[in-house]
Image (cartoon, rainbow, N blue to C red; front, top):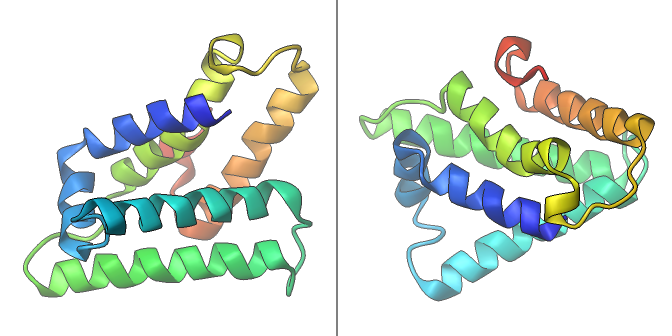
Length: 141
């Protein structure tokens, strides 16, 4: 699964509009800050995969924290003369987190996944996208 996430990260940072906001936040401008940022990202995804989706749960708190960080970065970038996070970029980012795992599961280390398991994974990411404010037309699979 982490191979899929690495491919996804490369997709995300290769998108100029996403890279502008990532650079603007100054949260990955040095090897140390980049390490901390992406380690935190891995932590949040592990929380999302390993906890129940209930109000007040660890997952609930984590996803809301990530949403608030994204909203803050988007707002600050806009105030500084940049643009807000685009819906298209939310779709690209979401694909980066789950698309390679769905399109080529065996090639990224996911073996013997059933159709139901893959559909459940898609559903999880559609819910995450919805909570993050992504329009369904940009994230639907």
